Image (cartoon, rainbow, N blue to C red; front, side, top):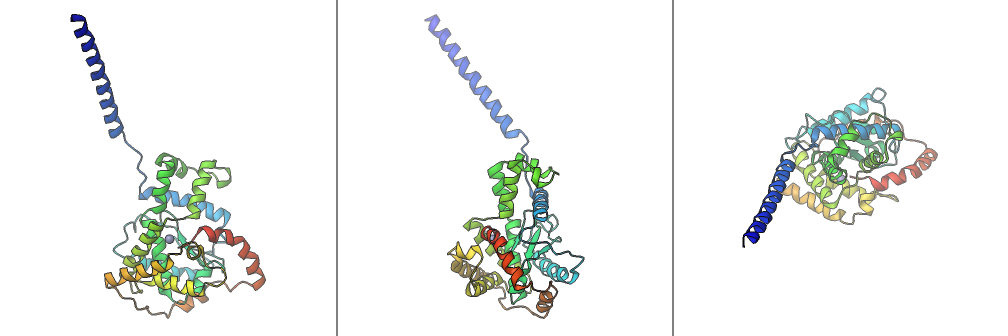
Length: 301
Ligand SMILES: [Zn+2]
């Protein structure tokens, strides 16, 4: 009997020890400082993407702000109006004041990296008939940055530690490790899920509601581009059959918000278009179009 008591005591002691060790371990895991990849880090991550874009050229050279001050004045003016919205959270942290125009007349697109570095193609500016439509696309792209769509996804996929490692790299993209290249490639591809696109559309309405622009201008852009997209519509129309639903949802959000859907004064729009470099010769354009085909497939508002 005494022997059994002794054995039971030993077993109990063993379990108490295990439970204590597990509890201590759990407390350490909970309390251990975790790296937090916040909006400030998004800007650093964005800088890495910018470095990569401007080294490799994302479908064309970046127009120099010194050479095209008028075009940049127009673009900055439009971006400033959108980011002045009270619904913008990271105005003081993100790089919205550092916009760039990519010279490629055959790309109807714009994008915004994590941390708010905005790029707009000359093709999109030339193509659109209303400033509001560009403001709508910008609002949508800014929403992807504000809602931290790609940085949160990258954090889940690669872990915050890896992203921190990436943002301290100062070496050129060509000599970076494979993991760094794959993060950069995903970030320059900037592909978003359906729910993220819907959220970005919805936020574009909120941002534009605070401006003089038609708050449903993103829908106007989709409508125009799907009607007249021509032979090579951007990928989001060919691969996302729900674009009609997106137009409907944007218009619904606009009527719910009771914001104005009237186009704003368009007097500056033509001079913005005229301030771009003259359209490329037809032969040059067809050479360019093959190069950009691949990129168009992965990017899109
Ligand atoms: Zn999008």
